[in-house]
Image (tube, rainbow, N blue to C red):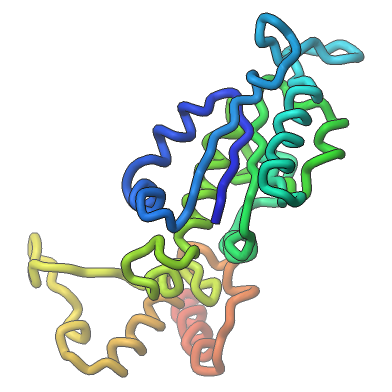
Length: 246
């Protein structure tokens, strides 16, 4: 996976993503990352990339020309028209299914806006996906871009040490993850559930499934509408609902 970030703050991208799991993945070349400075493509001698909006209004708008030229340069370099994700509150809210879809790409481009937004004309020319990380406004697209890169990278082969961990954590089957425990066996009077110490794998898996269902029901019941549920799962949830209503 090759990531390309069109941004006014390349150092913000490179410094933040150069650590921890993503940093190690970059060192191993499981993924690659470049932050492209949009200011380097402006024809303005003062490196100005924004101007006042037509029609009036507060704030400034990023101009089309430097963004388009930066994109064109990138397209020529990689040799094909890549998928371009524009980070905006107006986009579809990001979820795990989107991460799985994006992880299949060879190259992904992230366009980070600032100020009051970006000239609509360049968005129409280059953007393929409009994506939001939530119904709130940030000062720029860099943080959302990093969120997407982190989530997508976990699904790229070779990024995680345990390849199964990307599949069996929160949102697997659209359910939240079950509770996790480690040593010591007892901490502050709280003991690890006995089933996890039993060595009985079938019982452990059954317990984990029920806890995953229960946690999703209690914290994110909206996810259950599209979760992959067996008849046994549905019966367990019915019992939970009945007990809650009593």
